[in-house]
Structures are given as C-alpha cells and as structure tokens.
Image (cartoon, rainbow, N blue to C red; front, side, top):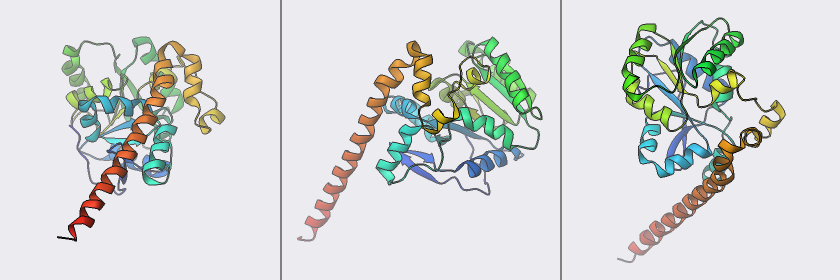
Length: 271
C-alpha cells in the first residue's frame, strides 16, 4: 500500500514509456523525502527507474502496476535519453539510489531511525557500519538479510513495526524488492520506504564505486560492467540496446497514433 500525503513540495512528473517519473532537482527531492519522513502518519514508497528496470517493466505488467503506485525517481543516462526523446529535455538530476540515499541521510539534520532489510547477512552488517560512519546522528538498524523465505515476510514486518522506524530501506534487487514492498509494507511500518537495489553492497565496500568524474560522465554502468562482468553483461550489453529499441518504438507508435487521429479529425470536417 502506498499513501501519498500532502506535502509542501509538489511531485511533478513526466511519462517515460507511460510510467510517471518525478522530475525533481536534488534540492527538491531531498526536501520532499525529508518532509515525508517527518510526518506523523501516512507512507510514501520511493523507487527508481533506469534502463534495466524499464526493460523489466515492459515485459512484466505486475511490476509496471507496482511502480505506478510508488513515487519513481530517474536513474541514469538511459532515462535522460528517453526524456529528451519524449519531452525535449533531460531530467534536472540523476537521482540514482546509490547517491540519493546517502545524500538524503546527510541532508536530514533531524536524527532518524532507519531500518534496513536486504543483501547477505555479512554485507548488511557492514552496510549498517558504513551508514553509521557516514551519518552518525541517525540510528541504523539491521532487520533481516534479503535471503529469507517468503513465509517469513509477515514476521519480519512485525519486527519492523515494533522498531517504529522513520525510514525503511529495502535492498533485494528489482523487481523483487518493489513487488515485496507492495505486498508486505504498509502504513505503520515507516513513513518513508525506499527500494535501494545494490546500495548496501556499495555502503559495505563489497562493490567499489566509480570515481566522481566517471559518475559525472554518466559512465558508472561501464565501471560496474568491468568489475562485475559475469553478473552484469546481459543487463548492459543486451539490455541497453533493448531499452533504446523500446523508447524508439514507443516514440514512433505515438507519432503514428497522433497522425491517425489527425487524419480522422480532418476527414470528419467533410461530413
């Protein structure tokens, strides 16, 4: 369940492959998430759309429906290309979760309770320590690794409810994490819930981050491919061309449909 509370910052959106994606800049994105975490009631779920997630969404109707019930932020160069193609402009910021969540923790000056679920048990523990060093004024609480049986979900969320966190971070990979949140997480668990993908691996030092220069050039995908070729070659070498195919086909179909509507309207004048 996802409840969108009233906030002082409006989440304006633009459609990418018919999915609404927020076009926040960094400042508004941080302020929006901070305000949600401070509310006494309600819940908002934040997810991210990159080229790989978009490919999954195009083949998985359930995943698309889940994302449509969440606040979706743009992640990576691929969605910028799509935004430029569909709307004539790129997104104001690349709000990828690997940068967004640590940045949000730094932005939030009010101490928060942050519950964490996902990754291997040892990686989760090291990620907690990484976060504690990064922003020690917050309380980071490991709840469960990401390899539990589905039948344990309700017991895990009962533990989260007892902890009463302000923020819940879920790292299980897409689309599993978004679907799991949609099924098992609801108001009373946390006001702000974020699906964070591989973030715990980065915070634990399990996977090295690309340099700031490489990230600014939007080439972190290449850095990750070099370091994890066995796991990621399909995602990038096959997935990136597939994503370009989807957005170009979508653009052509929209243009074709618009032309057909124009012809019908023009023809109707003669009757």
